[in-house]
Image (tube, rainbow, N blue to C red; front, top):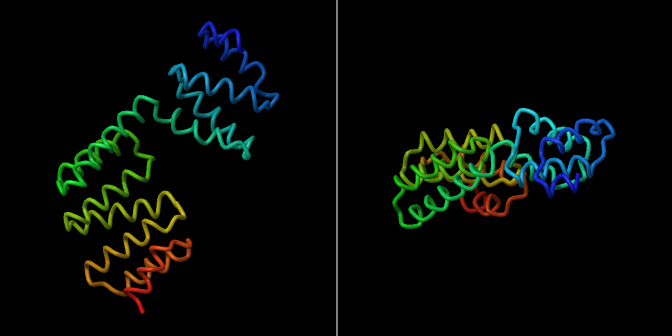
Length: 193
């Protein structure tokens, strides 16, 4: 495989991988998948299956979960989305929330499975006082991604503070505290005691 990698021969590498993948060799999976990503010659239909298989077969290897979004979304889309996000952050920091929202949405369209972009959209809506859309996006992050960080929960709680719905705010802060989030704990103490 190393010799074929030097010759950039992904077809032969894929052939070798397929012949030997039943051996469940971690290095074989890793070499094949990293070469597919690094050469930007991903066959999404198959490689997505192989990376998920590798995550399942080798749960202690923390490199396979890193490869998953690269294979799922493509490196070019990730770079483009990160650029959109950087532009959005600049607009956000300059209080141009409408432009920030536009660029966060572009990033989210490219990487719909990335919860950070949805959370940023929600927070931007919150700054624009569009509470309905902010709540919608916070709920998507909480319900669909199960991040267990407590961050979207305390942000949702803060939204309820803005709406003067203290009971709902306290419930959200308590949910944040269950994930051992310090900010959620501070907000719970500040708004609910």
